Length: 250
Image (cartoon, rainbow, N blue to C red; front, top):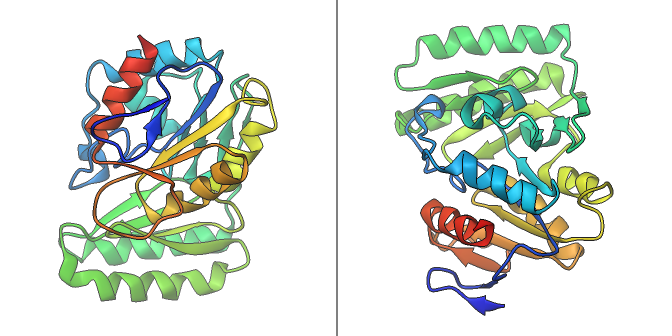
């Protein structure tokens, strides 16, 4: 192993023996002004597919997006995915699991959609079993968005909880996180027995870093903003992540 010029941690020189767990937004893809505006570099799906094949399928995307959206972005329906921060799951063998919504959650979703329609710059994102309000384009509405989301979270607190991220507040299924997703994958083939490498950029990825650390793996945070993290290594930007993935897939 050796250090790479754009990373503060030693990165494996090849993929042998690894199990890769990759966040998407801010990790594989550059952050965009809205969730729909992200750009997938043309060669990235090919790199991910080649790498998954090299790892006998031990590559999983662990994201706050829904599995359906992930498939729309990358066109890799055979790839293992944990969506909605662990609430949706697709194994390397194609088996899937998801969370059912409730009437109370549907009411919360409808109310938040209506409220954000009258808030210019605030983007409402419907993820199925989760909803999110992004205020990246209207940072002055942060307090308003947080108060609204806190208000709708109360009636569904038995099954959903608030999660804050980079200029976004999300109402997501309770009791599931990215760390649980990583641990679940690591208990099953083809991940079992490999060394986990978890790469993410946001506070929602911290549980994934913790899980990788517990399993004596490698945890890497993308970004150089100085925020404290459980990750034991750093990479500067998604372009550096993509470059490393391309090298170990070659």
